[in-house]
Image (tube, rainbow over all chains, first blue to last red; front, side, top):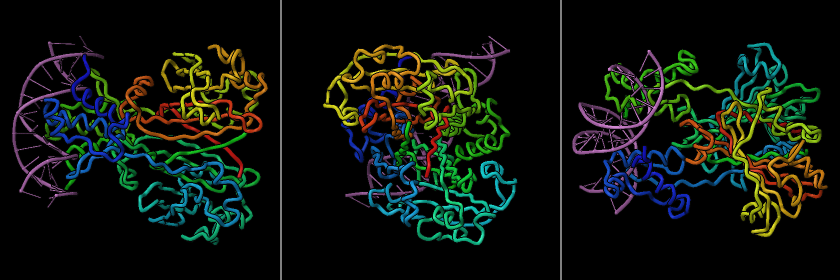
Length: 246
Length: 246
DNA sequence: AAGTGGTCTAGACCACGGA
DNA sequence: CCGTGGTCTAGACCACTTA
């Protein structure tokens, strides 16, 4: 019934981390050191460190050691970055997020595919209707921070730069405007959960790091859905902001 | 270098869960059963089940067994529920979230305290200036789903029903309107992380369940900040939605 | 009473990183 | 090379649930 030893050890280390006694980047005592200090088996000390890792407070590296994690988030402005003044003038909608740090993409694929069922419902299309699928990974300072997959109806975007890897100045939304389907309304739905192994690998996530899933629906005038964008964010790298009137 | 046994076992079980072969609520094989099936030590089988629990896919109960988790979220409408038509007419701003299920509160405390530094900055107050702090826990069907702490400047709300546990029809925002400080603009900042032990306990969270932290800033006409509300949501119970124009 | 998960031990071998 | 974390074993005892 009392708190088991491995939790007591974890509690003590957690207190030190949260109080700042152990600062970001500092080394936590090793498994063996903890085992000796507390008179427990190495596996028990290991369990204590496992608790902190699962809470996202520490990060272990084989051969090196276990260190206190840092939290230096990117601010993602849900409302402001999608204001028309952003993409309407050829600026990247991402600039505001990064305090000037460059945001790059890799693993870019653009292809025409039959529309998945759940996307078809949102885009108001027949199942398997052709859609252009834009898939990419975003990086900041060579670290992956987000995965994104956009779906756009082929009847709308076929033949446009949206079907090319480089969509040109202003990006996809500027091109949709060129095509006469300027997005005028957005809806974002978000949830958070622990990553699956493939997500953890693609984002190089540490142990106790959740992902945030955001699905954005873009609508042109008259309520016509023109894009669905499924994003997967490293929760330890992002602060998300939305602003709106009462 | 090859995939260790405990991961192989976890991979196989995960596949069965994600494919629906093992449905929500169904029992996963026990530690001993897995150990026998795969010819490993019980602790190794246990490690495999630990992986799935950390991913939020399963939930273990001592004496009972390990079962596949379910995800039946509450839809939290960030924009619509704060539209003035909601609280302006005496309706609870929460109704839309729940498909008719009643939302209740417990652990309600309302007290006047010196303002914490990070809140003082947001409310444009001197540090330690008096604020009324409203603290409560929200439950759906007797399950805790969210913690919330609101901070309101005493110079604005002193003497009003906002300093009582029951704020009356329309809630805090209707009372702020009565006081001549109707909120006209909101800003919400969100992040996700793993819970600390006290959060996990207050929300009765399972092992692989993150929390979503949302801080809402409410502004009256002229940009006067009138409330800061810090919320802690069970990520496995919430879908969050925001809508806004381009 | 039998079976479940929760915790712990005292060993072992391996892969990796830094000095 | 040595210390680090990562994995595994073959036991053990306990607390809890269900039948």
